Image (cartoon, rainbow, N blue to C red; front, side):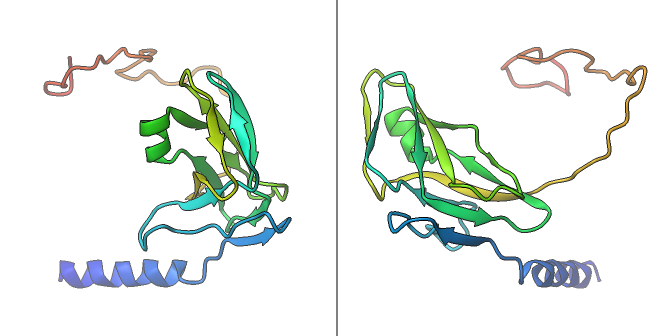
Length: 167
């Protein structure tokens, strides 16, 4: 019985998302189509529309010359590519594309190495991941409820393996 329920739920989810589209347009002929590198890749690879250099220990805004429209109820998250991070110390910042943004999709690259990083037109520099989002109403309160964790943050739980939920 439970297997039938799981299959029905999965079929319903697949049907729900089967017509979801991410629309995109080229702003110039320099732009490249966003590409999913494997069938089940979470992100769509974004490519640079221009040659440029990211200075050592610096940053640069890399234009894709793409305009996108993410599906309703989602936003685009511009995320790093693991190979660039591991091999070249390149990270991505400022990576939120709002549902109503229609400008040139730019990627902020941070170079954490001591060597400048050369970007060539067509290089895959980041990936775009569509994520669902909620738009909650705001409610101001006098005080929030207490939790076991409290104000602990920024390393308060340590780095060692947790034993029975505590350190």
